[in-house]
Length: 403
Ligand SMILES: Cc1cc2nc3c(=O)[nH]c(=O)nc-3n(C[C@H](O)[C@H](O)[C@H](O)COP(=O)(O)OP(=O)(O)OC[C@H]3O[C@@H](n4cnc5c(N)ncnc54)[C@H](O)[C@@H]3O)c2cc1C
Image (cartoon, rainbow, N blue to C red; front, side, top):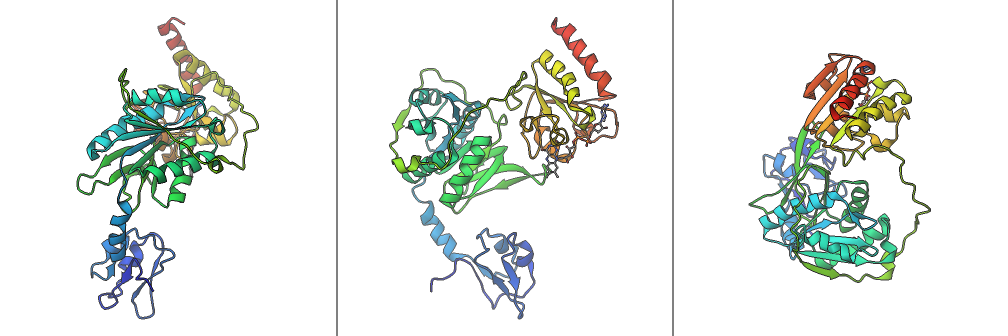
């Protein structure tokens, strides 16, 4: 029988239970003789018990030996180039900006993966932003995003070229795509990162993201498997600058027809009807919450938003009440935004809302309750009735902007 990858050295175990408490996966229990027993079906080999044990009673030998071999041959930093109808989404350029720093720190190449139909010429936009190589799969079946097809192709490319790091935007497409890829490749994935760096000693990718509703920043590593995969929040990293005329390798990749099969098909595409800016891209956001009282009152915010070129955000309370579409929700279970200016109207500022907007450069809060938590993060607070304050603001902006 092969030796288990992790084991308890029974003569050292004193039954203190520290490992039981430390295990995040409920994989350790004390038996009747007060000796720790590891359930290998639940254990993920995360190593938390090793750190917790003060008596050298847990050993993870096989993992260390095997892991080194498993990491061999993985090279380069990859960015999934998200595109819609041939238009590269700006999050891709942010990933190339950050990917360049990581690749340079590791002495590796920066590569982009471009999947789509009729997209080959678009590869030049990626090399101009710093990609050394662009892997292109240009097939009619990839005309629009479908998670089955895109994931199958991306998995094939990863197996073929073995990237060390694979980044994608924490967008609807990115989240849907790379979770499938990570599960199939049996590697780790850190979602929604706000910071990435290379550990100079281990050369592992340090993946930082808010945890526990934004109360702490957790730095996560994937030491035992490759590629190291992360989705990265939009608008957090700087876009790579355009270097006009910069070229790179464009590798046209062939894939088997079987990878392009899908059990789903798009029936039709219905673009959202919206007169204001998309909040994921917006430099200014005017957001409304339950304090608006009814859906019609969003018209007040729309007038302000249209005056200053802003997008419309909303709290979950407003979305749950069906006052506005989910695509406008800001927060933990909505979008993360990082505008230059965020004007929160009738939003109390619960932690789940703050998780999505507290990194805005300037926050203006309008709330009639002076104790509302939103004022703790606000740069400027206006205590007052939004139904009076917002029309005044709109008028003042119209005058100032000559509208
Ligand atoms: C797992 C989980 C995930 C969640 N995810 C999200 C998320 O992604 N985004 C999110 O927003 N929430 C999220 N929530 C919900 C969150 O906890 C709050 O319930 C929600 O943010 C409250 O929305 P609100 O501030 O609009 O409403 P309320 O908390 O009811 O606040 C309304 C505010 O309006 C003010 N007000 C009322 N009338 C006026 C007026 N005339 N003028 C000025 N001010 C006025 C009140 O003083 C009050 O402060 C989540 C909750 C959970 C449990």
